[in-house]
Image: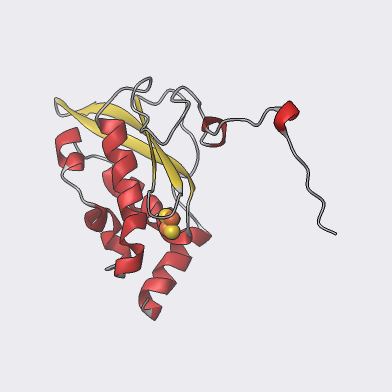
Length: 159
Ligand code: FES
């Protein structure tokens, strides 16, 4: 990874924009990455502008790497004012563009953001979760993970 890219990612994660769940979102999308097992959820709110329905705001939560956080941060900023059709044409590369070109090993991190966006824009809050999310109605990303049953908890002491 280039120094310049690393620096931009560090800047983005030092002060991530639009981080956190959004109450009263119009759409929610969640995806998990088959490449690394990380997850990202995006909340989207729409508004009317000049007779068009555009994205007012987008927020995110992720169990992902620094690159995923940085891409989601810059992507959610770029999405404001876009129509659904415009947003749906954006690739992971487009969403990561303010950071610069990602190395091949980090492209799936941007695709995680793209996937969550497409999941949100392709469905409604009750139905938009991707298969990686076992509980679509969960409001936080943490809640979407199955909770372990106390009866099944096994503690192994390392001696
Ligand atoms: Fe999993 Fe980046 S390594 S999202």
